[in-house]
Amino acid sequence: MTSELIVESFALLLYTVAAAVLTAGGLAAEYASVQHYGSGEAVVALWLAALGGVMLYAGVYGLGYQKVLDAVHSS
Image 1: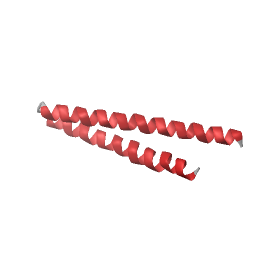
Image 2: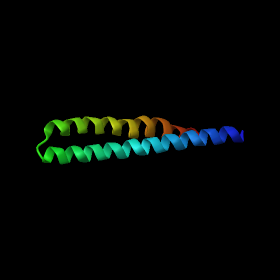
Image 3: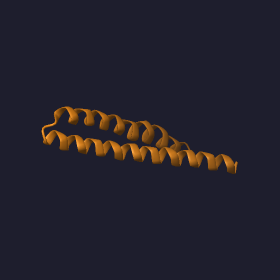
Image 4: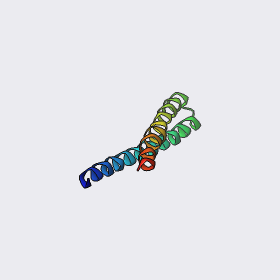
């Protein structure tokens, strides 16, 4: 039973770290998008906005909400 708890805790830790990294990367991409848009580079800004949106979705909803929060509530 202890080894199962360690494996589940380690998996939860990895999901939490991955969600944090994706969310931080998404925020950085969105910030860079705003900066590029302000300097007149609309195409780069749109690409960064799309990339940031996907990263935020994956980090906050895909991993954070569906994996981490679900694992915390089920235990």
